[in-house]
Length: 255
Image (cartoon, rainbow, N blue to C red; front, side, top):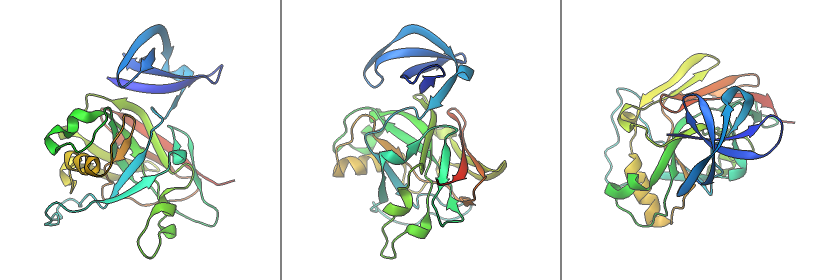
């Protein structure tokens, strides 16, 4: 089932819906526990899709894919390269990505984003997927020019508009068939199955839950495949995962 968050064209009320047969059926209640349709139905073309949720936290993992044909590192239970992205950096489908002043390029990073649906603390890998509500698409936009020489990435990941998310949360995604893709100005640049992921999603969720208590609405960005490149002002990036949809955004100069 696909969940959406949207705004109608004639007012600024944010609504939630489930997508069924191309139409948005408005819902009320908590999407993670108890919701119901209220009878209002909307055509997608008549609304503005927003990021499908407002996360409590956005957590990313870096360096988590190998390129096709490349051997995976031989490590036993490594500490993942993890970072936070501020919720204020989130935008939705077709919103604009702002290029920070003084930069000529920023990187796109198409990713499968995991939405936590239940409180999770110290869970096992075998239990991990039971705590997942669904999956969406994220673009972990990055300005590596702002990475600190001692290693921290926070500033380069945190600019406003640097976390596009959407267009839907899919609750029934088959992970064995997922391919994470990105088209840069219409040219395919990223296209990787999850088999090329170094640390798998259940391990990462379990590891995070051993450190912090995950809450419903937390979003975990599971890493970006090989092929990420720099974008310039005027470029369009389309992050795509079959079964979820396409997340398209354009780069503009910051005001």
